[in-house]
Each structure stands twice: as structure tokens, then as C-alpha cells.
Length: 164
Image (cartoon, rainbow, N blue to C red; front, side, top):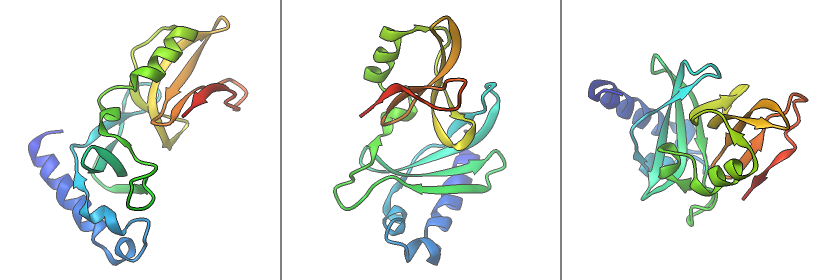
């Protein structure tokens, strides 16, 4: 995202997090103190642009995210941490590349056919690194999230995977 859009994004996110609704809710109040990071593109299942994810951090721990439409309208605000110890948060490096340990697990179990891209699984609120893999002779999507990974089976039930 270019500088003018980044500046607009920082202002938009900051104003939203300082609204009374978020300030009065303990799950969100502390997010206004977080560092607003560079927006990251979220792709649809075909690889086209869908929206932006704006990580909110304390040091290198993602404690929240704001999802913006491509037109920079706020779609969703999430709090990922509970309490002062940042439990539930994850490392900002997640937005640069999939966690190596999870990617290694997937690669060790299946034949990976595509490069990972930040995408979502059917619903834009369920995002992670998407890749395609050969699973029992079938090409299926695999999603790597901050907490683990799973294979989306054709049955709509995700039964193959691992979570931290």
C-alpha cells in the first residue's frame, strides 16, 4: 500500500479505535494504544484482491486486527489478546510468511502444489495462508493460521490438521 493510502489508513483506524464503543469495551479499549502496522493485502480464493488486514501490535505481538475493504471502509475489528500478558496474540511475522514449523508439517505430509498466499476460507473473517496440496490424490486447499493448519475437505468438515 502506498504512503498516502497508508497515512489515510492509520488515521481511519486510529479514529475508529478511539470511538466510545471501543473505548468502553474491555476487549477493545487497549487497542487504541497499539501500534498501527502497514496494511497487508488479503486475497480471495482465486487470488484477486479482497480487502486489507491492518495488524495492531504491542512490540511484535499482534493484539488486534482491523479489516478494511479495498475502498478503505472498516469491515471488522478483532481483538486477539486477553489481559496484560498478551495471551492469544501472535507474532507480526505471520503477515510476512507462514510460520515455518506449520509449513514444514504440511510439506512433510503432503505434496504442496502452490505458493502460499494470504487468503480466507469461504468467509473473509477466517483468514490465513492458503496453499494447494495433493491430499490422497486430490488437490485441496490447506490453510495455515497463527494457531495451526488444516485441510479443507470437500465435506465442509475440517478433520485433518494440527493446532498449537
